[in-house]
Length: 100
Image (cartoon, rainbow, N blue to C red; front, side):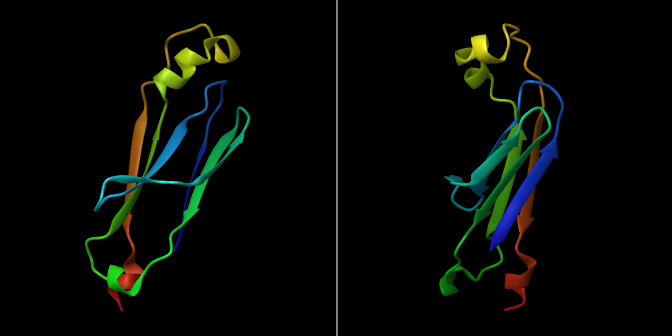
């Protein structure tokens, strides 16, 4: 199953995108592309097994600004300590698997 999230922004501080398996609360590795000062795209492909066919599986993508990252790289990004206070969480169950 292929999933992706994309967000457009302006500025020097790019948001972070984190994928999770909601059933296990584990972070899912993903490929993230940052188009400088414009857009961040994140995608992953999850291989499902036949025994994964139950309705409570859900995945999420959380978009946020990671304060600790920017504090560690303040000379590169900005000396300001006022990161945007923004978090968005998208969660989806795979509707196609419910029909199996």
